[in-house]
Length: 319
Ligand SMILES: Nc1ncnc2c1ncn2[C@@H]1O[C@H](COP(=O)(O)OP(=O)(O)O)[C@@H](O)[C@H]1O
Ligand SMILES: [Mg+2]
Image (cartoon, rainbow, N blue to C red):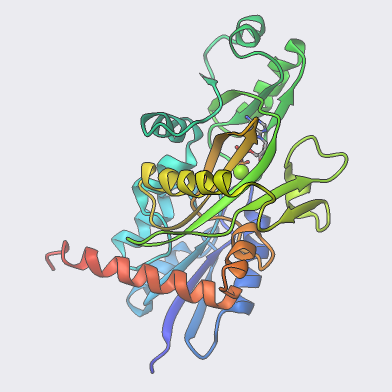
């Protein structure tokens, strides 16, 4: 069988560049070299080369996080070049990347999400009003970012302005959300038309982490990740259903991973990741492993799903 000529995209220009480079190396190592001829592209420097090579690429694996990678821009370029790629397309990627748009779509689909207010840069912030409407503590986060970058938990009204300013360092939209104290869960889904919810992971950040912050996410041993999560089956069923519902509400494809918090038997959806972390020990691959997919098999599956999904678009191209 002929090898699939695979473009592996990692690096990029977002604040998650390093995370992406680390994932890229592990993905490269795990890919079956008998099946794939792999070329590496870093969008920071190699976009022109990617365009030049387009006719010699059968599929792309986008291992990029954050703006200019996970937000539909790279997906749009690959669409124009007629190259299949894993996961969400332009529409889903851009909507899921923007936490405000995602929350509006969750609300439209009756997916519970923490109460919130959103602010653009020129709007006046009145801490007393915000705390009055949502209560304290609050979570302040940039509209478009990831890996908990630019995020603060605010316990005192007087800290709100500084937290908002930090959020604006990363995006021109900031979301202020009600803080939900509870058990953090994340649930992956995999598939094109038939979606499979993967085993749920319970996330327990270690001492010294107020939440699942950047260090808790990426420093080995800082967080306990328990799969399957220690929750009742009735709740687990609800988590799986919400993960599938969120995937559909945001028009996603192939795979996604939805973050939630369980408080008093009620679930709140925080966000849905369209290119979840992809080191061998990241959450999505861990949960896939419990479902029986080794990291190598998971990558095969994502590539197969992308090629199948792309077949459909051929019918729409009158060339
Ligand atoms: N409303 C909230 N209540 C409690 N914790 C939150 C809330 N929003 C975010 N967090 C904490 O911050 C982490 C990152 O938030 P999330 O919305 O998933 O953004 P991202 O992972 O894209 O940076 C979560 O995993 C959780 O630990
Ligand atoms: Mg998250």
